[in-house]
Image 1 (cartoon, helix red, strand yellow):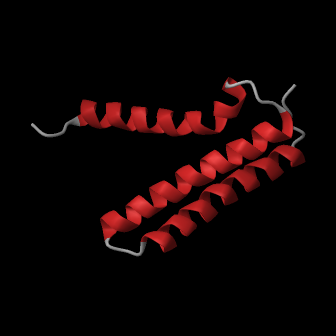
Image 2 (cartoon, rainbow, N blue to C red; image 1 turned 90 degrees about the vertical axis):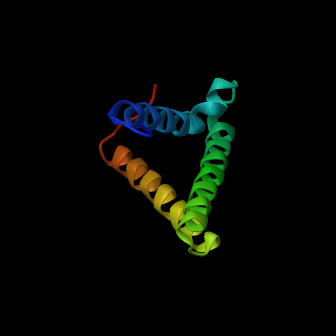
Length: 93
């Protein structure tokens, strides 16, 4: 048996968890403030570009176009989330 529900669930969990840790890394290593935010944006940007390019390669599409599309979607979602946080007065103490 190549796959199965448990393997799919386990691999999905591992991939999501490994992706979710990327924006938190600067704070885990002691950075704070604007430096941490900028490094998190850069790390996430690199991860988005890499996954987008990989999808392009695997699907036979141009990797750069897919990479930039993935970056725009990811950073766009982060921007919308940030603006919603501002509108609803959500902050981190």
